[in-house]
Length: 67
Image 1 (cartoon, rainbow, N blue to C red):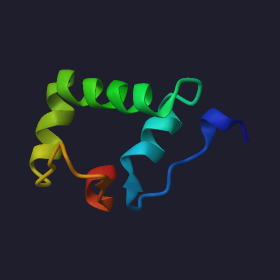
Image 2: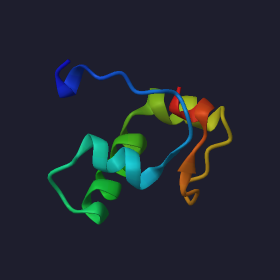
Image 3: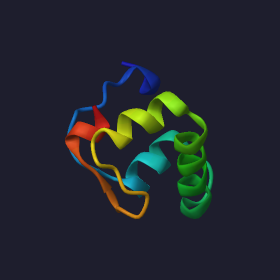
Image 4: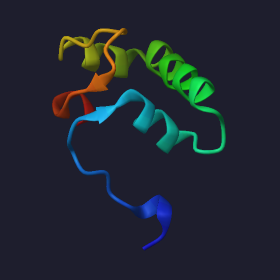
């Protein structure tokens, strides 16, 4: 199975873990900033996370937020 075809298991993930998975070739801080920017600019994603009581300062996404 190719790397991009792997299925993400629904479980809690640290923000840094997801950020690095989506941007493995940049440093952790830049990857976190990119993830935060994607969340801010994607209104559908922002709204879905809001419904799960997402807080921008939390360090981990819950299983529900990952889903």
